[in-house]
Amino acid sequence: MKGLALLLALLLFIPVPGSVEKSGYDGIDDAAHFKYYQNESHIIHWYEWWYANLKDGKNGVVVMFFTFGNLNKIAQRVVGVFAVFLDENESVESLFFNPFAPFHLDYEKCNVSIGENRFYEEGGKFFVEYAGKNLYIHMEMDGGGMPYGSIASLEEWQWAGWYVALPYGEGEAIIKCNGKEYRLHGKAYHDHNWGMRKIGKFNWDWGEFGEENYSIIYGIAGHEEMKGGVHFINESTHVFVPYGKIKEEYLEWNRISGFKKPVKIHIYGGDANMSVDFYVEMERAYILGYGKMGKPYLLGRAYGYVETGGIKRNFDTIGFYEHHGRFE
Picture 1 (cartoon, rainbow, N blue to C red):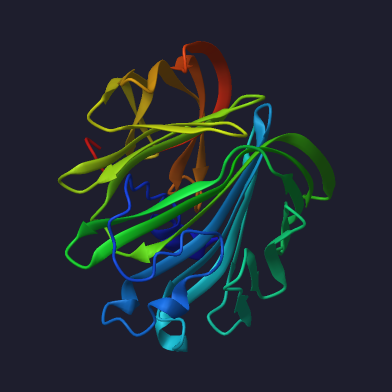
Picture 2 (cartoon, rainbow, N blue to C red):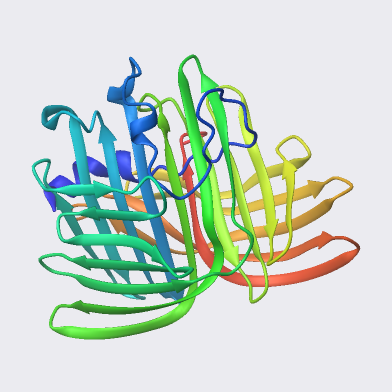
């Protein structure tokens, strides 16, 4: 658990670039990417992970398979799995972290193994198998929504890749912890992040909120210049409004575990393709880390409307959101 607190600054990082800008290998998919960049001079700053969450009311599961640094050298790499089971009363966290552990990365599709743990795609479904000392998770997620991704330059040699393989889906999970077994069924989300960047040179807001037939995902990120925007995704459509045509206002703040976090956000604006007007309000902050020293992980309620193609959709749903860097 103490190791978890030290790694949280690396783990709670969801980059959200807005446009394809980087030259060279432009694979934007759910497969591994490390080997295409392993000879670059800044490879020590490499990061790549596969993230998933499942929400059943106010209960949920979050899993992240992560790799950092030069994976070809044991002394320069960090590989592991972070998993957490969330209910209305507590969070049960587990970390598998061993630089000597065997791991495998598939460069054809999502298929990652770290130790005895796996995150993989098979027949259009995604599976997570994790067995930690205090937490066991078996999760299955089925497709929903149109996958999308981008690669964007950030600053100097730094860049970020982002692929949302499952914008909204359905999932089931079996969780075993503290001598009890839980079964969840609900909305599922999975994305994949990779690139090279310095620690502390990135600020961002991110949130994903899935309805029955579509999902609203927002991401605003950068250092001095902010990028990103709001995404609307369903089975056949992906509509994006870039930052600059939408506004984000922080209406209320709270100090949580020493971190200043927005507990109410207003996002609105649009263009000829889409208009949005919605609020995100914090429902609960889970403290992930060691005792009360961890970082807040936010569960929020998003409500308002999105209009695309002359169709106005009102929504009121639960999802995860994050805020890091700006105005903290």
